[in-house]
Amino acid sequence: MNFDDQIRRYFGTSDLGAVAPAALDSGIERMLVDLGLTKDRGERFALWALLHTLGASPELNAVFKDPQEREAARNFMDLMQDR
Image (tube, rainbow, N blue to C red; front, side, top):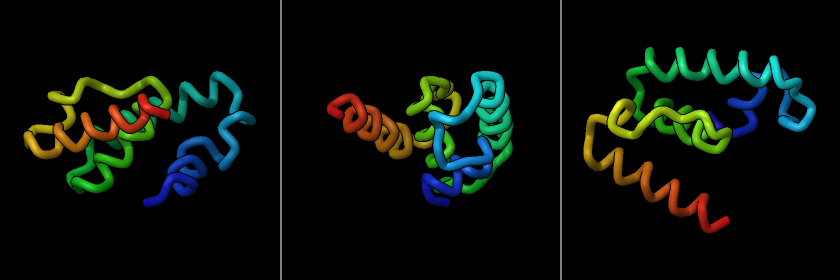
């Protein structure tokens, strides 16, 4: 799942700037539900990363039980902070 596909899936457009605040909240809520339901590691990471980018990600320990996955998420956070 790539970034544009995720944005279109949850917000109906690839332009986040065009998403109304209520639609943004609704898309984030759907993402959080999907994050809780998915068993696929890659999909879970992609959802969490987008939620983090939007300032709505849950705590690492709640999402990633595996220490290597938590470390990958921390690395992503560090990379995003440097931008």
